[in-house]
Image (cartoon, rainbow, N blue to C red; front, top):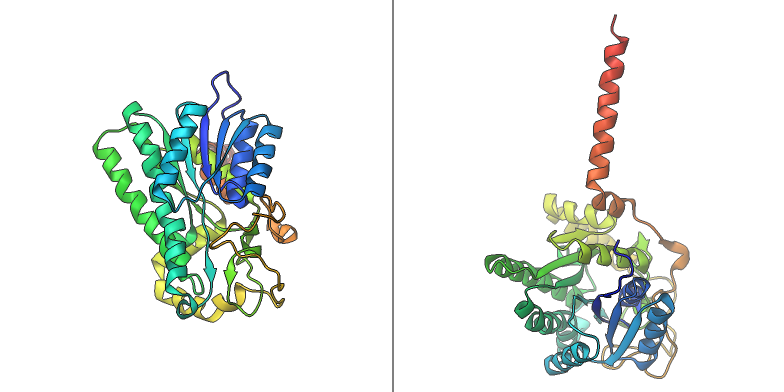
Length: 339
């Protein structure tokens, strides 16, 4: 992992006020990076900036709704004027609605699509407008296992993640065709313990929850930083559950449809009812006048702090060398045991 240098990276993180974006921003702060924080809520932005600077970086707070193309472009211009050329742009911002499709209003569906899909498109465009003339830079799209496998009660979110996946693949092909040194990569996440389950618009009987196994946002953040450092790989999978879901969808998608039809409703909600004062961040930031939610949700006790699968995927060479050494040792032992 790159250490702090005399020429720190300039990094942009959308959705930086909470969850995975917050954890990513803090980790880049630990590298001494100059981190531009894009989000809507002032409270969360201030908290994220404090995290970055406490870790050793420098933060620039920018209240921005990524659903507005002109606003994102203006933010990118201000970032380069204040911090310098952008090295890494990380798209994380999202919102969602937990409900069956027919209970999501058209304007709600449009809003999720504008933030979760077009927000990535606008962020990518703003980054490329500046990176392509310099012929360098990295863009990381933070995706999900749901970019490949849709699940019930999340039609808007799954549709947006599928769209990002197609957008990412098409754009990557164009950059390869142009022999550009600008890189794009995507990180597919599992269920993560973020505050979204305390501020998402929900029409479920019980409080929303991530489908176990659940990982802490720092696991996702480490994957994002690794992806930015190794952008030649087209995408990075995080968590054994992500791998299992994507492989199952390739092998037996119809069987997976029926399994999710039976289990998908119950697994995404608890027996508790939502509090009457539950905030909703679809139209306005949940932390506008409330608490700083931070990176973690309410599922710390149920969340994994590490992913053996992620470590293995990032250490192919080490595993191959260990496997080869083991095989050679076994062969040598067999030779010695022969009469």
